[in-house]
Image 1 (tube, helix red, strand yellow):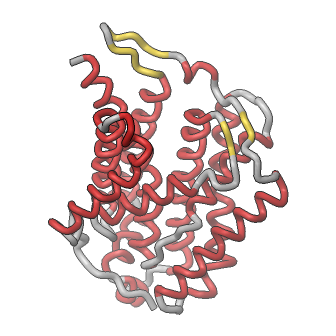
Image 2 (cartoon, one colour; image 1 turned 30 degrees about the vertical axis):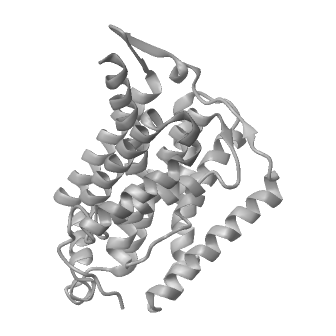
Length: 294
């Protein structure tokens, strides 16, 4: 039972991380119809910020990581995606891939291709003992931060003027513009929020792995995309649910696959997701509308 509970805690932790990444993907897709694969590079740049700032107090490190990710997200929107806003989805998708590879290669030119080790907050590597369970503090922090961000984002979308405008844009972008919603402001706000989520995710990821590399964001963005599709494209709740379902599948395979098959864990995880999508191709939660962009 203790081992099973440990696996449940691991699944919730992994699911929380994937949900953070997936929210950033789903938010931009809901507003713009864009699957932003360069979101992984927001995580990467946030992680390199941790190395660049050295070892200040951890609150300063967290703020610097988040600010840098937000700044890059806003720059992406203004420089790369705003000029292409009227293009078809395929063009936007190719642009996001090009931006992703460009930023990765820029990081290689500046920092080199070799991973760099770092340490963020030593206390996060400690554990809390609850009976026979040993729970890393990082797991508790990851879960707590994710719940706070999910709650804050939900309140923002429900209770604030900008949040209501973002929801209206996600429902019918053209009608929202006719009614006076400022497209530039709404889309820039969505990118800013995605940058904030990426910055927090970067800090938690570096705290877990202890290293930074130019391709650091590649796996998280892949898992986030799978979780978004699994949960239902265009649904924020679906992205969160998909993140936790994917986390559960991921940890279950790691725990119960035979030792000789564990190196194929990701392949089995993606196969399980494919089976789920064959059963329910629209995803776990269906978005209320299909959004068309102009």
